[in-house]
Structure formats: C-alpha cells, structure tokens
Length: 88
Image (cartoon, rainbow, N blue to C red):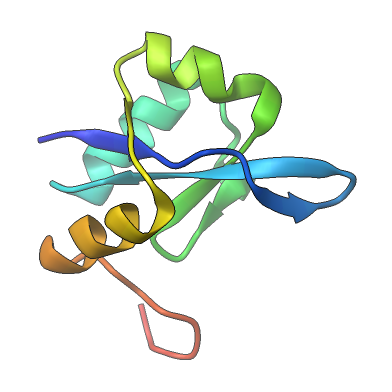
C-alpha cells in the first residue's frame, strides 16, 4: 500500500501540478490527501491534483516519487484507474 506522486509538470491555472494516487484504495488516497492539506475539490476521478509548491510536502509525508507513465501503470494495475468518459 503506497501513495505515489509524479513530477509537477502539468500546467494549469498559472501553476504546475502533480498527480497523487494510491495503489491500494481511494480511502488510503483520501486519508493521505487530508494529512497533506489538499482540499477534497482537488480530487478528480482517481487522483488528486497537487500544486508544485506542495510536492516536497507530499514526499516528506511518504509519497513515492515516480514518473507519470509509471504512475498511470500502477494505478491501472491496482484496478483504480478511472479515465475520462468512463463511469466512476
């Protein structure tokens, strides 16, 4: 059971963003995000969007740094991937 974060390379709203995911459950992910102080509105289908200024905080709390492709692979293998257009 691990929480992962990819590098903050996704542009939006004048900032760069990371994705925070769990390979175990959404409960684990929501608990971690709450500890990190990420608001519930940052949750999108299967991940949290985390601004670049919170990246270091997520790593210090225990999120493992991995690349974006690896993050999607692990999320998919865990059966937790919810692509756009597919029901939750």
